[in-house]
Length: 178
Image (cartoon, rainbow, N blue to C red):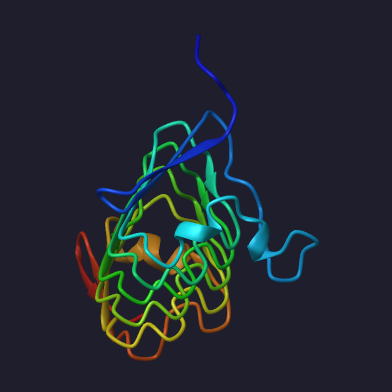
């Protein structure tokens, strides 16, 4: 029997937060009733170095890992189709992220203020990138896109979705401007 309930666990030895279930991660927001302090794992946000999102999770919740300044690595499975707004906002130690093939939407400020982020891979299935999705990612100068230049041009990109420091999109058939 497979549980559909959302669950999380903390591993003190490896400083790893693991999320599992056959559902979406909960929504948190600094403007909601529970706010970001309503996250059950909030006591570990300041010390987490790794995040593992298990296969079955359908979306990474808004503000789920907001201000996880010590986060160095994240594993996102192909079951994820959406990365909600501010999901990884302020993860200042995160240096690279590979967004899985299942993702179609990267919402507003999803990776905003990830100042160490230097490598991003976006899959060809993405159809929209929200405003300021990678804002203040000061080390990000290029993005890897698994699709073609023609596919890149069809993605809906909201205001400042791609920061001005990004000068090149590496596509499967050549490079293009953002």
